[in-house]
Image 1 (cartoon, rainbow, N blue to C red):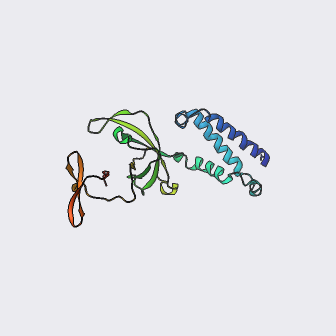
Image 2 (cartoon, rainbow, N blue to C red):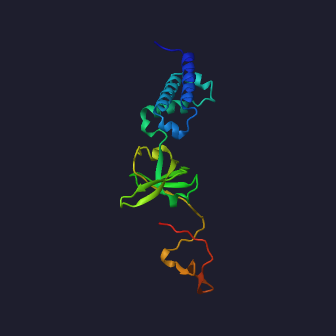
Image 3 (cartoon, rainbow, N blue to C red):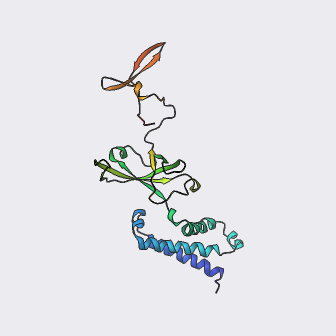
Length: 214
């Protein structure tokens, strides 16, 4: 039995409304933890994409304002790459490090076996938790959520529960001078460095500096 194009469009509209109704009132975190609404919305979106994929090209061209390719592509992604749905990275950082991070901070992600990936901080949890390190040390940790910025082709093999190393940018300057840590010395309560002025080495302590592990 076949369905008409009009019936398929009605199916797509009805199931799109169903997907919204299953998720309405839930935060992204709440939806991620609510399996039944999550699975119901998942199924509804698959039906939407499948129904619209059967609409002839000439009819799609009559409505260029509809994102046909994106909607159908979502269905294909849900079916064939379901494990990568809304893939994001949750990093457990020391609370002393987390307080230095701003939302939207840029992130470099590596250590997962593939190429370096660009990311962006989207959320810093307002509350921390206690975690015991491998050395038995109690540490206060904060969960930081990071979205992947680079195209999926660069991280297609990255999956759920993979280990990654994240490098979050907390400060940057385009014209910063890089010096080795050994070049610094204490002058009272400040860190100082020798600079050459008028052919002589002079002490400079009135400068802004940041330490890095690179």
